[in-house]
Length: 436
Ligand code: PLP
Image 1: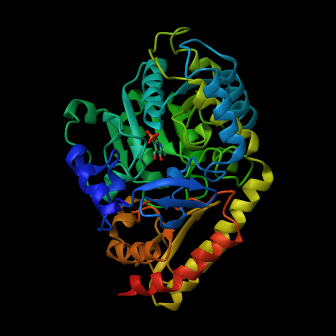
Image 2: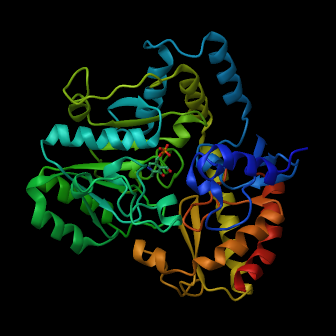
Image 3: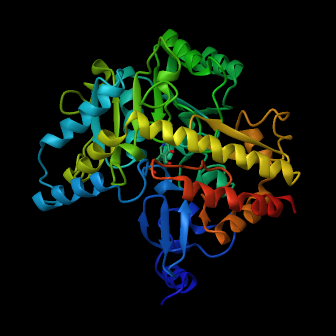
């Protein structure tokens, strides 16, 4: 049997860092990345035959767990009919209908292949529809890796401690203004100075790429109000939260605050059920600026691929209220146990949580008394060094966490009492490892 280490060594000869996406490289936690070869329900199995309870969930898509029978059957049927036709086909509209049924503001939808493509296209659309150039984003929010959105981005950019990316020109960066998250005064200020030229504010519905950072009460509504006042669009990036966070329904985070809708949404992860699909969606009047009805170009050989559509349709059809309440309940159990274990070990921390999405921030004050993390500056100031030992202790005990303190933990409808029990059993030793 080839070991994880041998596979990783061989991969490093062929691929930069041995990976196809940076956070998989274990850069911030050290050690050898695990090479997974199969998944079932809440479990992953690596190349050496070790089994782990999975809290990465393919970085979000695995809402129903791995190899959910309905999703696998749907994919098999789609494959049997052909891998793609390069034409429209009925399951595109079926997935669009499912999205619109749960997100009233998603009046029209364009399928794309990745979250990056969704946000990149949403920004182009906002510029094309408004005739303005500047995009405002928040530090620590990650919207994929298109040039203009990489400034002060979360996720792997935060994990690697990068300000942005080499290769992004000054001209591209100059049309993105970055301000701190949850900073109302900065938002007002940026519109006071540049309001006439701002095409859009893009925000994660609930940031979860600098760890989870809840929007302060009314912050999203303020973005809505101020963009409307200045004729800019509001782009609500729900690639991570869409069809996962369920505080007020099935649809993501937008429904949590009533009385307003963003102009544009982006979705990804769960809507593809594990296949490469994402989408942008929004008001008909804005979406019709997209080609072929309008002048803003977007196209894709694999957009709306039938196999990916089949996985997405089966996932959303099986994402029932019971599944969401199961995930919410299990997330609460794990988050509570995490807090208790860290308190017991004397590790200052906060559990950053919105709905079933949560992460831990170290050194932010004892649970229940610390004020937690509200923006990227605070996220970066935490005791990140505690996460590596914590992560490796969990891994040794058979729990696969996202290999970065800045990433959210993902539970699924398949995380049953056994799987959750394994997590709970592992937490005390991991908390002690974090204490050192
Ligand atoms: N937007 C958000 C909020 C994300 O979390 C991500 C990925 O994690 C993206 C966009 C980019 O999606 P993708 O990795 O599919 O390009």
